[in-house]
Image (cartoon, rainbow, N blue to C red; front, side, top):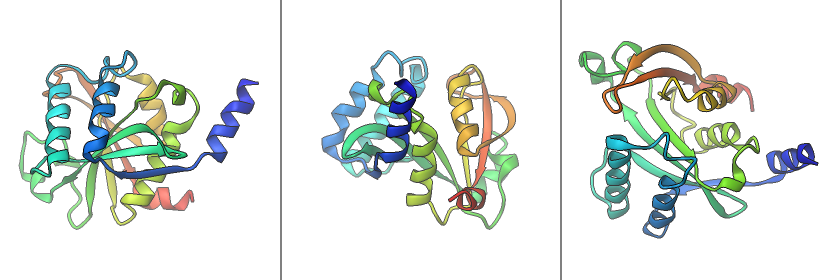
Length: 191
């Protein structure tokens, strides 16, 4: 039964996370070209993601850190994080400026599930929660900014604990996005 399969994957699979290495680059590039990913990673945003991934793998300075998610040792997801600096509060062009909370560690998150067999299994929200508690336990706030039209992602993010703050038009791509925030303390309380 489909419901039984959902419960099995949702409850019994072990999720682990590590920094992306050179051996992961090709699989992530393949994921970025998959039919279910292309509507959400495209144009300049896709090129920025690819360039950032390549810089990260080479150990060059990059705007974000790249992570890979494994389910029972099999790679299935790609995550990117970056630090939100308090100085962004002074930058009127920063999408985060009005949400900066001085003295708190703030990060951004972006992600995808690359392997189709893991789609629709209830793993995305779990992946987000476990990743943040594993790698960013000492952070305070996590921001994510999906396109407003990406209702599936928004649903998953809300399920993971994110709250909608407001809509804004991003520079890349210049379409409506939701600024969403998750308080790590609330996530810790769900453990």
